[in-house]
Length: 188
Ligand SMILES: Cc1cc2nc3c(=O)[nH]c(=O)nc-3n(C[C@H](O)[C@H](O)[C@H](O)COP(=O)(O)O)c2cc1C
Image (cartoon, rainbow, N blue to C red; front, side):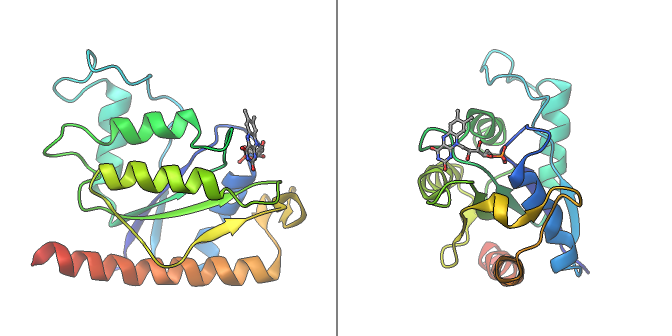
């Protein structure tokens, strides 16, 4: 059975470069099913709202993640760190403490920036947050995309740079294997 991958983009911007990177993933590894997990309509995290199933948008968001075999986060870096909208979304997926949808979930982290440093600092914080949620972040391969505006086609809204496409393809293929490893681990 093909794997179901949730893709969360950490930018709400219409012409987001990170969204363009995310748009390219399905054509590079077409053996999986993909679902883009929207975080735009989640309320700001408030424990007072977090009872029962929570607000409708949260319930739907959690259900979508629950049905995936793994999630890939594709995110920019803001002020040397994780974008607030993404942190908010990960916080909503981290509760209820014992049954949260991120527990034991395989996760991958990718980031793109027009700058030179490829979202290294943002990815460190994303990994730190995912660790706290008890998801299993793929440890080995990292995917830092710098000078992204030279690597995309803004008409097709896809990644076009051949070297980066190959690297992204290898990253996602490796993520599929990571899912197998985590699923094995979860059964022990
Ligand atoms: C508030 C703010 C802070 C930013 N801080 C950083 C940063 O620390 N490092 C970086 O590489 N780019 C930074 N940028 C530039 C973003 O990488 C750039 O706007 C990028 O295009 C955002 O991703 P997106 O195209 O997916 O929306 C920042 C942009 C904004 C709006």
